[in-house]
Length: 80
Image (cartoon, rainbow, N blue to C red):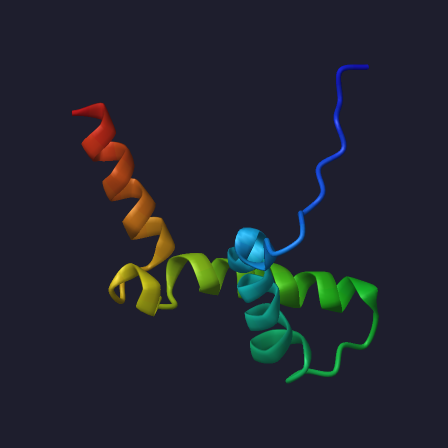
């Protein structure tokens, strides 16, 4: 009952930029490049892409680190 609706305000287009960029990558690097036979194949393809995106693909915004490397390093720094 204490839930509030969250909406982007006028001029706040960058609030969701990371999520938008991720879904753009998912569509252009995975979904649009493959023909999936059925929803199950699509889900498996997306699961493979998510693993690739987080564990294998270097990210320019992270100085060419992979997200799993980058965030593991951040957690180690916080725990120290």
